[in-house]
Length: 197
Ligand SMILES: *[C@@H]1O[C@H](CO)[C@@H](O)[C@H](O)[C@H]1NC(C)=O
Image (tube, rainbow, N blue to C red):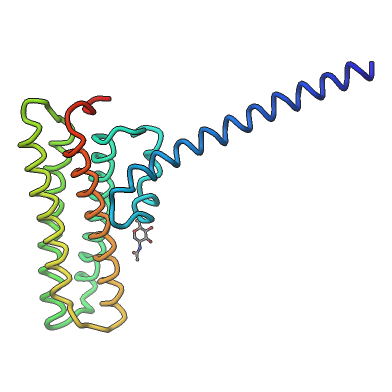
């Protein structure tokens, strides 16, 4: 009887420990996927933070990471755009700041358009037009980055608290955009054989 119980306990222990090590192993793998994907980016911690949710689905496929990077960028740009629009509506920004804010809202609108076009291309990558597609993506995502920088230019040298906050948000989204561009460039350099993997 005692022996049977011991045996059962031993079996339970063994099955638990196998499960645990499998879970840890799987987690380790997922983390490695996002870390490896983000290793080509300039703001790696931010990359890992924003893209970890895609570790399972994107695996080790550059086209999927590029798409994830651009989708996340679109939602982050839209968040900042909504924040800017709210700032303008509440009417606290005056004079030159108000003009700069209106310009920002405009340039963010262009950035959203460029990123949407980019996502459209990433959704239908094709062997025949791959290099044109990569060229378009580079052009549009770089343009989105330029638009974000143009927004920042309007507030250069300002130190008021609410403008600092705005600058931080815009800078942050430009880092996320820069990461997306790096993921697209990675796709461009790994090339065709990875499409659809
Ligand atoms: C930058 O963006 C990430 C992702 O949305 C967010 O977690 C972080 O708080 C942001 N940082 C700033 C300074 O806005």
